[in-house]
Image (tube, rainbow, N blue to C red; front, side):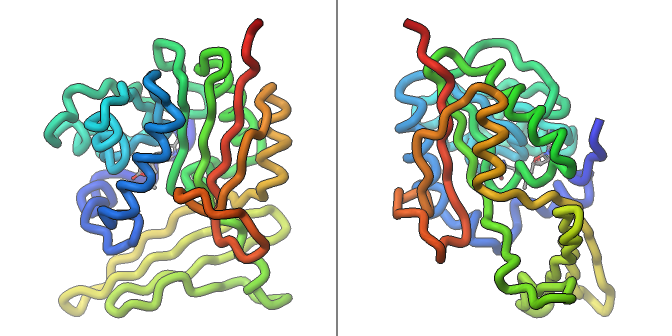
Length: 245
Ligand SMILES: C[S@@+](CC[C@H](N)C(=O)[O-])C[C@H]1O[C@@H](n2cnc3c(N)ncnc32)[C@H](O)[C@@H]1O
């Protein structure tokens, strides 16, 4: 079982983040896109967390279920209005089984990178394929690895310089590893959190999908379906499980 990096100390502050991912406009666009793909069917969120997306998606009429490793994150989801309507399997989304078959499975906010080995990411695609109904679709939102900005020999890239909050990514290019170091200065004290990730290329995700018998249907640059280009900082990709005749 992977290590839980979203314990009480992280979960307690998760929803207070100033990150644009918590902006109501961003959440609305994400929910509209996912509801469209769900097309009246049910949805499974891998790494459901505190319900940033699952709760408004459920309010939009989609029946949502989740998998998450962190009891502390799930406790916060359950405490929110509507949270008791969403069933969550506590476990590793690369291997845990949630009851049912789903029209949509989704993994947003770079969470595929929380699986820190290629084998775990491949297992995750296979696990998703197991959960999808025929013709069901898997949506991933994940950043494009930022290596174009990393000069040869460098290891650190600032991703947040917003005093008193600072963040630096530490790259391990040989192993496709990334540790995000967060520093928050408060009352003369510094709070630090470091999260390990494995960054992953769009083409590599397509190969993982192929291994799980899923077919790439679309790749967009964002939730508004803008084209994915060489300048895109992230992508929203959809793979489909084969429709049975
Ligand atoms: C960045 S948060 C995203 C939460 C939510 N999806 C959102 O968009 O706000 C990542 C979530 O994935 C969960 N997670 C990370 N690795 C996991 C794993 N291997 N299995 C299940 N959940 C995992 C964490 O506990 C956390 O709740």
